[in-house]
Length: 374
Ligand SMILES: *Cc1c(COP(=O)(O)O)cnc(C)c1O
Image (cartoon, rainbow, N blue to C red; front, side, top):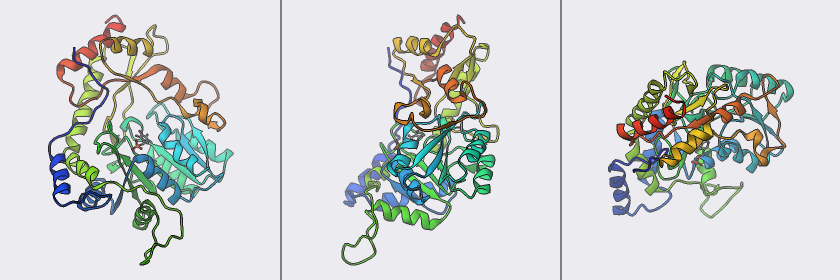
């Protein structure tokens, strides 16, 4: 039987034309027309004036951390429920992450817990918001809190390109925002990322840092530490081809989400991951949680699907439970079982590949339903 995967790249053909153009013109370099055009296309899609194409989403987060002025021993507030890639760049700068619990409504950073974090640590260097699984965080409240405290906001929109909150693209609320084009994201370039910023000069600065921070002098002169974080012109060609289809990708992801929701609507023990009522989510991955009183647990569902050659994935394991970050503080609204840990314990990500057929969806749904005796 066909193996069903979680989310794989979906190519359309135009990607190869842009790659061919790069070969034909010999722009086989970490700069060139595809890079410039891809930056313009993303900026225009997100509704910002400029974007800097980079080698990965993690590289983009690293530069955002530097641009935000985060330094050694500085505190940065980060949601606990995220991928380690959100946190690692903060540690590259030897700053100290303080993890914030999730809210049930969006699974993202709980603004009330964020307020509480400011009471305990009044002077963090930055706040990082993440839009998990393509669901936007509660940006009005998060932006208000950052503004009140005059703290820069970084938005990790790696998973949420195309997701809007109150009509505005996620990634463009903060002082700095990043998107990822890793292999399984909503569009992919095989690997890559991009940085957007409120101020155009910050995008320019990111480009400068990504090119080894070479000063504008005739000879090789450097007055600061730089990085080799540029995006290749070949990779950017893939991105240009993908951008022609981003809205189609999102519509298909949304359809998958609603198909699961409909299929499980009669099973009270299954709940879909929330949608932000204030926006339109790209539904990068469809997730479910199993109710606390159910005799079915997510591991059992994952095992049953794996047996049928169907790939799933656990919810991101919260950062405050990670061995590498165990010494960092974790702020929740109320003591007791944290919301992020509870979601992790009871949840899983279902296959969300936009190439899945009706037949594939039926197979997945049937096996999940069987676990609940339905
Ligand atoms: C994928 C991802 C990243 C990192 O992006 P890369 O391009 O893989 O470096 C960062 N944060 C989150 C939440 C992600 O899902």
